[in-house]
Image 1 (cartoon, each protein chain N blue to C red):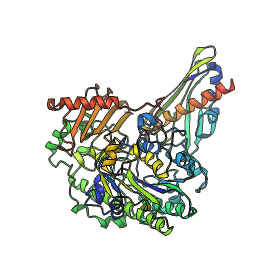
Image 2 (image 1 turned 135 degrees about the vertical axis):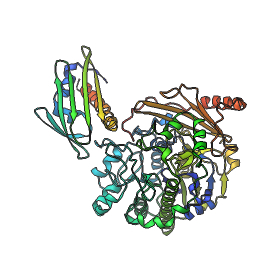
Image 3 (image 1 turned 90 degrees about the horizontal axis):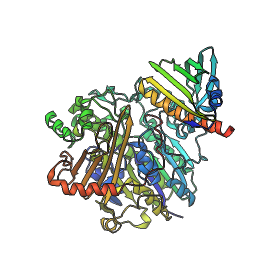
Image 4 (image 1 turned 60 degrees about the vertical axis):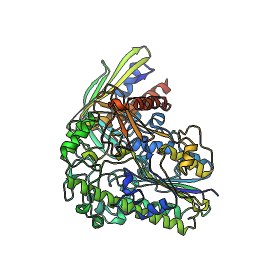
Length: 123
Length: 514
């Protein structure tokens, strides 16, 4: 997703774990303690996550769902600089079972569209 | 006052499951009676053989390429054209009760309106979504956020566990077997019939109809989730059809050698699925191997399917009784159809996928016009599509068919169809799942079905299927490479290319598996 804003502005949202509720449609609560984040979906599911990477130098955020319904999971959000006021944001997901990757990636795609609208409307 | 419209759909029902179409297992006197006094279509073809694209075609009157729902899991945009909105615009009250599925179901974030509606609002009128001012949703089983699941959970929680678990622990469609034969997606469900979703859909429809003003014009889409798998009808109904007495379907090839010979003549994903080496459709259980399907399993599945068809027929009878009681019997058009078919043992297969043959593409379609217009009963053999439903609703309502609809009002006789150019229907398949893609474009015309495979991860773009429906009604002989048919094949292939509909401006991203 290309966002017409500088990476630091995008990172203001992504790098602050609990701001997820502002841009990820369907996540209604988020609380983080150390590297443990728990999100609550609109359907009422509470999902524990481990924040693996939150690197403001490389603009990389990685988290793992640690709930029993996934054997393994890693989602990665990267923000790349395309110019002074332009960023490329990628959201990738590896998951076992693979079906969950489709669900998370589908929601992630929609979330990036929200993030783009949010940031570009601010500007 | 205009004519009122009861649009009845089922999910995944074969043409030959109705008595009026020659079906011998399920007793369907209600639909048969509608057929006897209306129009029966012997070659009704879906524009997609899976739910979301097909249902989106019914709502929009557009091909999947045009409305943009190219596979299950791709949501129909909320601002997509809708025949319900057209009817609402000319004063109709509009409802959709039962299975919608214009938006993905696997949605833990409740991002989609269909899933978010029941948890967020009261179950009553006053919504406005896609042109419907009343919505109550149900799907297969009793898990999830839809109205039926919530109703059952609140009122009869003891019944929840009786349903077959549609998904397994890996969120894959469940391959677990049950019943007497261990057939996949078969299960004995102890739920009382009056709590089952078929009766719930009818009861909620009756409730909505009963609350309308007598002089209302209305369009009600009553959408039963059955007879789609899982096959878990109420246990108390199992005595209706003894599976041991059910004959094997004509399309079931009893000799494994003969069956495999037929399959290898088709494009390779047919045999790969049969062998369990490739699944190209999420709704077919990935952990089930069709080659293991036994004759008794086919019999049991067909018996349970027939029971579900009978329950639907009786539920429809209850709704028609309400219409009679309201004094509307002369003013209501009833259209009965489904979104796509089901293998049910044909070729040794179950379920559905990228397979454009009659098992999935020949659909039941019956239109009983309002009695006040004194229709002349007719059987129409020309090809028609689900794409023609939305224009038909407009025509019944006496309003102009919008330009954005690709179809035409259904013909009322073969002569009418000939005069209005009903000669061909298109069907399409696109899928991209777990690294494998399949793209098929199909044309049905003059007793021929031609499917052209586009380049994908599985195909080079030169493969295809070509069947003569007159000589080979079970589509067991693929003529695609037969030099004797090269000329007619090429003519149809050219026509198929020339007939492709306008494409949706963007490729809508896949959002979920289904």
